Amino acid sequence: MSADLSKTPDEARTAVIAAVGCYMLWGFLPLYFHLLAKLGVGSWEMIAHRTLWAAPWAFLAVLLAKQAGQVAAVLRQPKTLLILACSTAAIFINWSIYVFAVNAGQVIEASLGYYINPLMNMAAGAILFRERISREGAIAIGLAVVGVAIQTAALGHLPVISLGLALSFCAYAILRKQVKADAQTGLFIECAYLAVPGLFYVLHLQSTGAGHFGSGAGVSTLLLLAGPATVVPLALFAWSARRMPLSAMGFLQFLAPTLQFGVGIALGEAVTPMRALSFGFIWAGVAVFAYGAWKRTRVVETA
Image 1 (spheres, rainbow, N blue to C red):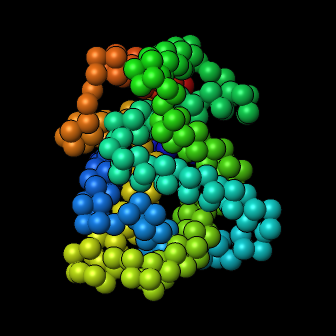
Image 2 (cartoon, rainbow, N blue to C red; image 1 turned 135 degrees about the horizontal axis):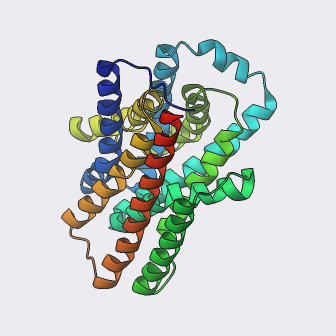
């Protein structure tokens, strides 16, 4: 959906702040999971609490957006519910890969996945929906392919984490493109799907004494924060995307992986010369992609 460019300066400024806030929250999210790991919480327990506590926050977002009626309508549409079940599986795979990557000390490789995701989305749009790829887009994709090839040589194997994150989120975007419902509605139904197994797993951990919820005020609070840590950035993104030029969103979306890259370095992850070279190609592709998005928006504005 294109942004509404008729907003007042104050509204436009607020939209930028919301977008920056969204990407900063995503960028620093590895620190949250790293802290939970330091307290002894395992990856599956983190994922379970994320799926469990995201549901009530997603429902709050539905209420604030006044979309309860839309949720009720979607619940009467079996085809839409099936597509949302598939998108739920895709986002669950994405969340799981990300949490395990952070806890395995692979934040830098995870950041690569979110750098190449927009470029992968562009390629998928051309293949599946016959969307036209601009010259800048083709160059950006080519640079990203070179970057991934160098990363493969640097690691000695395919960057499975990066490609898994990019592919799962690309699949999620493709599936959500088929859903005729607003972002908050779809997110709530996805969270509702995930909350059921999440609840059972948390109850299982608690009953066997392996769960950390209730073992201390600090760790319990952090686990409860998994809900807003998941939903708040998504809500900020949905709100700002409707009020900002596409060129600005296209540029700002790379703030999150850049922060993740910095967090990975701060946590002591190594950056070899070959890995640095691979990121150089990725960043060049990002720059070309952002320039192309800016140029297209300028054409629309002057038309």
